[in-house]
Length: 573
Image (cartoon, rainbow, N blue to C red; front, side, top):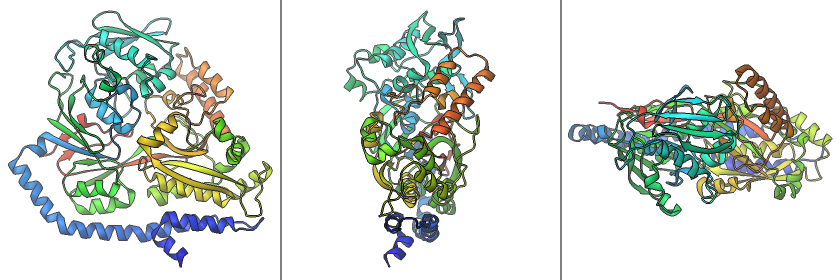
């Protein structure tokens, strides 16, 4: 009776029931590997029509009134044309630009602060606050040539001195910044400092030439020195002085952030007078608000609600093949190596065995409701393709036996904890539970620990304190494969959550310094990726498909890199 109820209504209970069945398997008796797939399939098959019925019924109750309200509002007010409302699952982390790490924060930050260069949806690097850039002959200095007439929010001139201040401030150790620029970009490019050569020329010094430097530095949000230098760190975290197309009008934490057009920004026309970001963690609530006409664009649409949204005829769903790499990381930090399970995963043969235990295409088709190809490296398949590990649970069992981890009398080889954020990535908790079931089926009893992303998971991840296994998703880039391999510059880097280290990988990183020949660069990267696949520091999953939905009053086109680009939106009449 319990098993039947589990299969019908609750993925979590179903998985726990399966784990109990697996743990009672006698030594030498093979568990039913397809059982988790069967449970997930039945759950989806039964739940999807029920969800659709409930949502469509609700739509029937409010749709007519909603359409009339939107029509009346459009006729009597300019609000629909002057304001766009975006709903996302996570809030801006902080107004301190050098402590920002998440894609949801970057979508807001890109409106508040200008950047020297921009990245197009196709991955091209194009001018923005800088008209161009040039390298010195030695390859250790890159100079940005600013567009004339740039302004700070207060109307004062934005010059190369502000550029140098922005870069040097982020690197100042007294501030202890841990965001994307100081913790990821600087370690990837070997940042050595910045200076102003004239009002319009700013130079950044790096350890050595690398083709990724311009794209990496495009992620720096430009600050005006006169506005930020007097501020304490606490004040900088709660105030914003714009150099971008919008300025801050108000922020109610975990509820909404309001921006208004910055009249001092002249590089491009801001399409809306006001932009409102609403923070709605619950996916079904985001969908309901979209269908009610209260928001214009939502991110992270649950796959099982796509049909209901399309059936409403008031909103449209768009999906893209995202660049975010979803994986299960192995934590090699000493504190996790001290546990029985953590000690086991220190061995490459054990990690490789676990690769064969997980049926990634089934996870994609059942939970994400989209086909996917399993990831085989941290680099986008647009650049390199390696052969992924196939699903072969029998081979996984044989490899674990050979590695010295046979099943005990209770059928368990060893235990692991898999920690995951909740509502940060598409179906993150359910994906973690599915992986947990697959591992438990081969005798690696795995328990899932879900936690809030911003307040718990992200700070712990920066300190390498998630594990022994952790589900994570690192954003990727279309403009260079070097971006994707830059997560592991050192064992201790904030971005190297699992503290992975391999001498051959490090040798490859050093070999890339001063390489200006694209073909030589490609050969080096290919070798590094083969090292990564073989050593298996990640249990490879997939590149996340992204689902967005928009209402009838906005022309919106999603990007693969998760940036919600308000500047590319346009109001519809």
